[in-house]
Length: 309
Image (tube, rainbow, N blue to C red):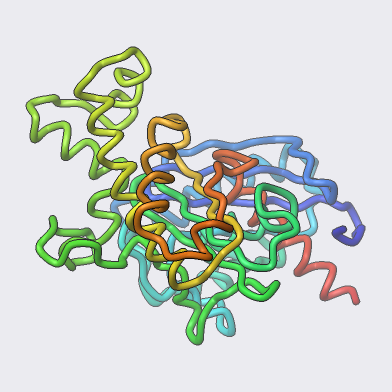
């Protein structure tokens, strides 16, 4: 359980490649207010202003009675300095993110990678509860990843662990936003699904492909099945490398449900080695689109509790 504090309320912020969700959250993980923003910014200042605006809305809803802010951002994070080192999808690079946000908000700030924050929420309270070893993939504009090993969150030597979207599954594959070819993200993401639809003459977003597939559109269903198989190939690599008890899948692709996850499970059964393939479960997040926001809130709750200990 999370320790009680002065107000028992924090703000969790999940900053994605295109959207932002902030929530005012209490120590029982009840969400009392949500603030939504489009996060795509042409420059760093615009991104920071968007975060500040959403946090202020959530703080005003709490009459200013908030103890801290947790931020999950799509960046490699230097935990010691609170620096956002680099990110593929937003103009954030070598930025003292924690200190900048603390100065602008006048509150303690705790920052981590957005997918690591989502992993924290799902491990503590969601689909990976009770697991000592787990992997999470958040699939939206790109792919984020989080991992628990031997009962501990894994961040790596420089805060760069969990970039599962940039494992290569085809060295001659399409160009990824990171600059390499054939990354998992280049095949499995909203961006990739829209690209594949365009190649077939369908000028559709990933969400529109999903809607058509739910309506029985054969080509749309085939596109999602193929993406699910490629997701399964990536998950099989993770299963063989990490031997997790569970792989949790979240992000915008959850709307596709078993149209995506069923072929992924079939591919894992074909590619992963025993005994790992016989243990692992591949499941959706418990908290859906709010995993990252709630995980960021847990970061803040933990951080303030530790400072009071």
